[in-house]
Length: 509
Image 1 (cartoon, rainbow, N blue to C red):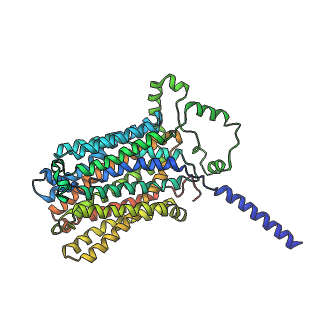
Image 2 (image 1 turned 45 degrees about the horizontal axis):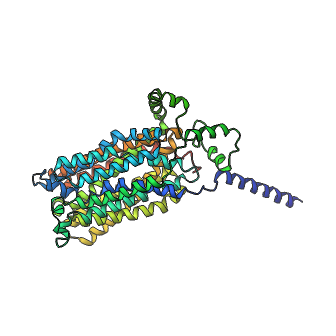
Image 3 (image 1 turned 90 degrees about the vertical axis):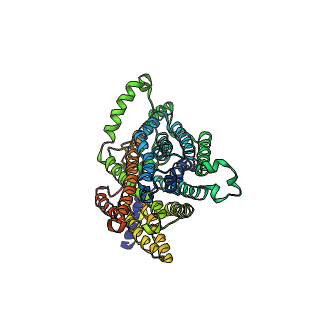
């Protein structure tokens, strides 16, 4: 009898633990694949149009004559071109996010794609430095999609599948970067590469970088058409919201929703309905807009939002510095400590990295997140930036001494380390969205994060390219001072990462 009683107790304990497990780890909701695919397609043109210039921007700067024939000064002007896009975006991105909270996500996305298309075409027709500057500024001002896309992805997912959805973002970014690097490297200056075919057209002699820009614009146009026809607005109508609120007291919550709320702090509501205008707001839109502006900023200026947002900005700075240094160092002649790569080689190398990065992020991030948790994974992956920056001087040393095999081996190590470091983006995006007080403020929260990220991305290219040029001109630490300064910055940021929460409210990590 005692054995039967113990067996019965064991069975009851097992059933109880299984019940707790079911509540603690509900089955994930299937992803809305069509809408998610469209959002990823929307995100891709921004990375494509931003990266398509990297393989040839240094050659473009030199061709304008702005450097006066001094190759060492290229970094100053190339950094300015790369910075201005993000500087202007920083001024407008928060407002695009707030506008999307008012009128919906789809109209803002369509405007952003249209703006990207026009600006990159204008860039292709630019053969003077001031024209390049204006085109790059227009691209930053008209594109506010990245924050809006993140808000939309959060709205179409729930706590059980949000990490899986955001794991696909690096694939969209990687695809955009891959195509951008490849298009920019292979199609730049086509008249010189294919004189017997493309060389017959005077257009490509006068505008040697028009072809990669128009190809990038066609991808953005395709995304615009797909979004216009197939994308469904993620923000519900006022009538739908009112019906949902009126029936909320009589509707039994599903196990999934109960489990989701179970892990959410009492002062936060993840599953509240998206913000829409109610009757009072429609009756007085001006007063609502002014009041909501003040309310939005007060609501998101809290540690749960600001700490992840600050880390997003710091990550954006370090990543942009790395992204600028790669083509800058790769294209610099070997006598000055570079690798002496052509724009074609730079495009191929960076596109291979982007392609592998996107695929690995989708496969590895959810698994690594479950194993290490968000904070440990963020710190470990961010530490890989130390490897990416420290390999630059080693590659330059080997290239100068014509140690080709060793140079390419270290280059592969650098690209692998950069892939590992890129995992930090998926972690910090989850932190930012998790910190939003409610879904009403997702657009404002992501807009704030993207605004700071854009500011840091604007500062990054100017700072790092100027340091690169200064290191060469003054021969600081043999021309390698810029790399060791970046390693020091990475270590400081790693020390600040201890302020991030150990867990996310969405999960039980």
